[in-house]
Image 1 (tube, rainbow, N blue to C red):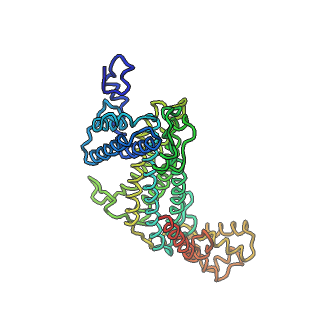
Image 2 (image 1 turned 30 degrees about the vertical axis):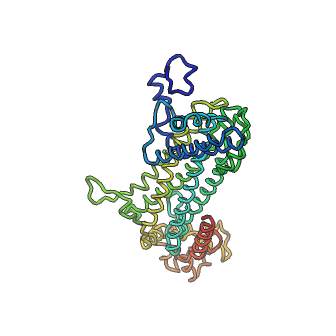
Image 3 (image 1 turned 120 degrees about the vertical axis):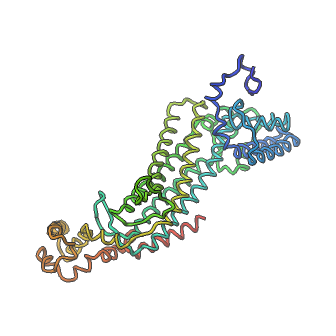
Length: 462
């Protein structure tokens, strides 16, 4: 008989070593130790106030847990696979230290509600870290936007030159995306911050527990209202993985642009050497490894989202051992996202912008064609007619190897008599930017307004 098992009395033979390794989770769930101890101390305090635990037992549990926490911090905790998981390892260590008082700690709870509580406590803290890192990356992008509110670059659709935009405006597009990511994380945190403790195995407990006390001690905003639901669902983890995937998708899109822009074919930016690597055979190479890896790691995080959804899709109520598989993808999602956000903010502060190359690229794609069409509309021509006129002018300019702004006035007037010498004011990239001076537009004045608006928002969020 395996006397190490808290449930071994039911069985006539010990668990095989292969099953221990296959079903054990201590190798990865020991990272929950700090939060497991938090939950246990709150549970003990509640049991004491409810009259279930004596003063002496409560004090012994508190002292024992403090010592265990110190052992874990010092790397002296001996984790045992025989005890399966972080919960039983800590409980056994506590019992070794304080005797029967340690055995009484589990009164009124199960590992089912215990693990659900631990994960929520841990994830709640990680979301707070992630939100802070999102705001730091937003700040780095805002700094770039302010520096380059007047820097003209080609805006693209279908990866073809479309219209001139401000580089600062382009950076602020990602600030907006990250702002929504932060909102999603905040919303998710609210649903994570609901306490399952007290649901016990699946049906609640016969002991006179007071769940509102535990919730208050642990800082939970709400209490899970159905014991079956409390222990069995991991939708909060799926929701977090979805929010994390969207952050990574946004960073993957920016990474793709940084990679393109750093290519000599664009030469719009340079990334600081500390974020790049060279080649083992080509001495001239400077490879943008960090954005490339971010682009790749987005698939990793999205894969974890799919894995978690698939994990839950066929489980009957209540708890099933399947749910042990929630931790590794959740842990890796958090680790990947935190590492990515940290390095990304640092990397963006090491980006060097090349305005002259950006402006030259604008001049290669007839980026002010729409401005010429708008010019004709303001002169009285219907837009559909102006669109056709400008398309003919673009074709002529393309065949001539010139930009629209480089065509002589008499040539332009050959396409429409409405054109006069004031047309050149709208055919410059700078004029195109300045003309879009409205809320959400790319005019430098609007870029500075939005950058300042975001600075104020981020200051309030701290």
